Amino acid sequence: MDPLVRPEAAKLCGFAEQLNPWFRRPSDNNANDVYVGAVRLPGLTQPANAYVKIFPVSDRFQFVYNEVIAYHLALQCALPSPCTFPCVCPTSFLRPATRAFMAPDPSSRFVLGVASLDGTPKNIKQTISTSDAAWADLMNWPNVARLAVFDELMANDDRHLNNLIRRGPHDYLVIDNERILFGEHWFNRDLKPLQRRRCDANVLADTISETTDQDIRQRMMRIAQHFVMTTLLTVPEIADNLERLCGAPPGTTARLIEMLNDRRTFLPTLMQWHAQKGDMFRASTHR
Image 1: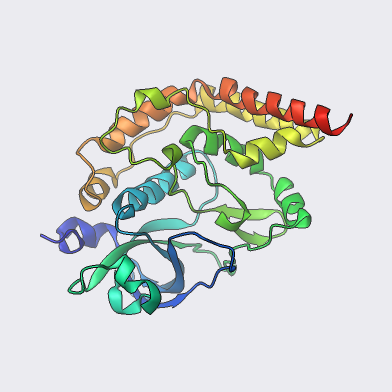
Image 2: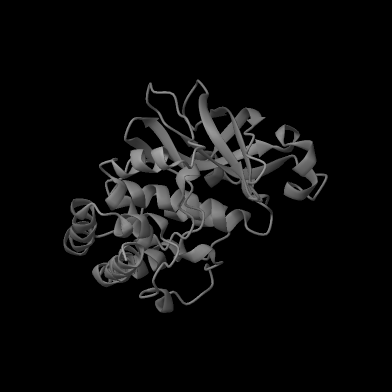
């Protein structure tokens, strides 16, 4: 049976009723398609505005799983994140330029994507600026150090200003977690070797470490210790249905949570590596 029409899909998925392409900068070489539009959630009578992302076929189910499970774990780590869920999208809504790539089977009426919505009265606005002022605004967000630690825990190697939603001055929502566990296809891999592997591309941790603001650097290290002491991740209720929808082996989520809880105990050491790298950067720039 097509996974998009299985009973568990109806309980877990939204349905896109209208989509418009989210136009990116010419320099953006990301293979994903991003849309904005109206999405109906399970059990709700009115559609909601949302961002919808469609992945290439080779990565689709792994990345949908990553996005959804990371959303639930971000909430467990006290990070603000828009409601994120699998979303069934009619192929007729896809951009003609990428439709054959995203839905190579001409008979496919639907593809599976992932949708994120804010759920607050504020207008969602994905930031597209990478200026010094934009970075300064982010560095003054109270949760930026916590997000740096979360990205290290989840081994997210693709955090940047364009995958945060800015709701106002120093106020952001966390999105785009498709590349957890270093962006690898990990469903059938042994996860133990990833427990101590540092996330070299943790941009937020490096930026915090390179700043001259001693308070924010110390806050990042305290949060890493706090994660070790108090943040025990648990398997979300949606795990079984999400695994079946995304073709993950049964027990994949439990395996992931076990590995992340083990990785959590190494966070102070992993964050210290970024801090030391930042010390060397500051020393080299102040000679």
